[in-house]
Length: 345
Image (tube, helix red, strand yellow):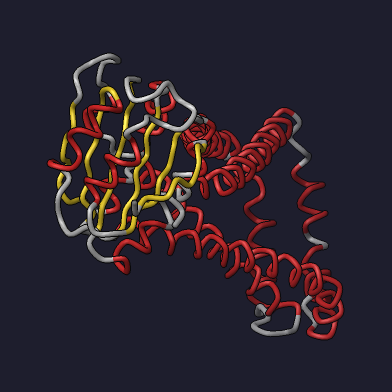
């Protein structure tokens, strides 16, 4: 026999690509929570300022002291002195973001390679284990040299597995129904591991955010070492303009509050989506009781029959109702990237 029982596993041990999602989703949830807290505090501060509008003359007098202060701070020697104390902290932040970005890019590369794999034949089955053993030799034919078999007696676990993996009609088949082996044809990795597509979109946005954060910190580090220092005269002119416009700025507090409220609503919608996705993926990955076999050889159908003839390991035997997914590929090198997201081998 060319099948090898890997074990009876939870979904997280089989859908290994999806198991990469929770840490990244949790990082996004944490970041969005921080963003919401900052914006909520900003709105509260603006409301307070609107209720207790400062004396314009006193505020203008205070702001009038800024230009000479800014001029002194922008002296190159002072900038370098201030920068020295900031540089180490910024470098540590950059190192952390670099490490996170490298990990996220590696996850993205693994997922993209697996989803883009083509030429994987798929079959799904529902019915008694003995029925699959009888049907497989004559129905699963072809020059398949590598593949996998997933089977379970637990309809609930199969339903969770099927949320992110294409299991065809076996997902909704009635328990106790007739033996039904269905060919899904030759599919791509993305057509089989369907749940990874939704996570892939979240991952792309996360990578964009990390890339932006890295660029921003790198620019700050350049300032701390005296590279690309701002033009003091331009900043002084901006400061003088701020003094002239202070009354108008305070009059626009209502508009600013509306803008921040819209931004909070957008972030909340995004956070709600990621929370729902995280809960769904967590439920999927925690489902257990799925038997996994790896296959390598030249007679996939016959080997499926041999592996499943006695039923799933620890189950009720050949007459017990099962759900199964059988995948086969003719070329091991084609299978390899897909195996890293489903099956783990």
